[in-house]
Amino acid sequence: GEKVEQHESTLSVREGDSAVINCTYTDTASSYFPWYKQEAGKSLHFVIDIRSNVDRKQSQRLIVLLDKKAKRFSLHITATQPEDSAIYFCAASRGTYQRFGTGTKLQVVP
Amino acid sequence: DPKIIQKPKYLVAVTGSEKILICEQYLGHNAMYWYRQSAKKPLEFMFSYSYQKLMDNQTASSRFQPQSSKKNHLDLQITALKPDDSATYFCASSQDGRGHYAEQFFGPGTRLTVL
Image 1 (tube, each protein chain N blue to C red):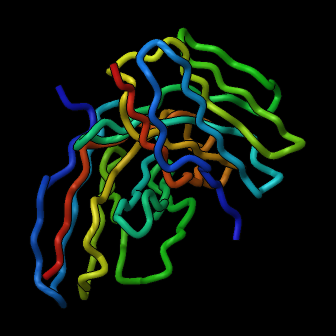
Image 2: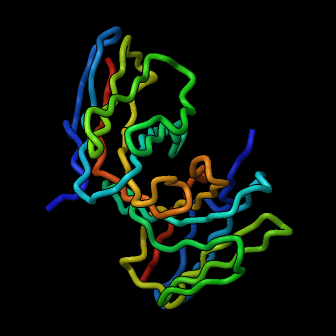
């Protein structure tokens, strides 16, 4: 079956550095790629998305890159802060449902 | 005020019993979803509804039955509960009736434990 894979299960960065979380997908018909954040003991909330008609999108300190040929997309968090510590989920959708990756636990250390 | 309400927050059930998980959203959204999160499968899509109609079902077992009595309600009935059903169940919604090209808003979850 189709999959979305997150390559880093955990990631530790120093405060102020950049963090990069990578995802790959198998369904070539995927056209929508959202990212969600889950803080400890809480639910998920949306952070940023990208559609297949663009290859880059930025929202403040968050940048999403999409490489359709490689079927890869990534979330870049610049100038990380302690409140960025959470589990980040990538997802991909072809218009049927959003298929989620396994999550990356990001820890921002002082 | 919470925009997506899930009840109960915690639920303990015995094997073989039946439970209903409640979800109400007050965002005026047209699409609602159920997901399951457990240690085995971090976040697993179960169902999607759009304008109270079932759009997608990725749940193999018929023991899981969504119920939509109102546009902003999507309950989940689980029968013949098994210990493997233990998980946190998240309800979500999105404005877009098609649902899958838009950000989804998640409820706080119901943590189900089956003994």
